[in-house]
Length: 140
Image (cartoon, rainbow, N blue to C red):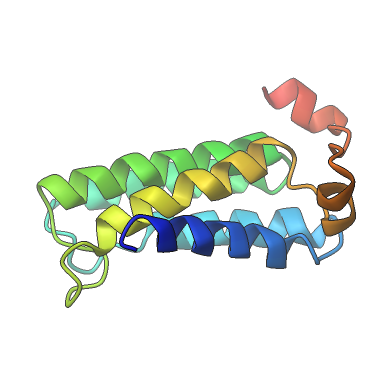
């Protein structure tokens, strides 16, 4: 269950976010990436590297305001940071030892949805893909 639940949570996140209309869906996801980038800031245990990672995620999230590709990259960066914290730092939830591992499993599920262009529920049911915007194509 330790490995299945994070996948379910990632899929549920994508499903619920897909109910929002564009461009609000993309912009809210960019804000979520910015928040994820700062998740370890108050006690992640990696010193100044926490600030550097937060700055990087802030830049990626800013670019994500106009590009699903950058939002997906942000979630993949956070996945890598989760792995580092699971192995060397402090967990994302201080009282749950394997919470960073769970986050590292959940985040790529969200990233894949974002890298597909954050399709709506209707597009998910149809199995289609939302056409990329001009900005998404130039950002990739």
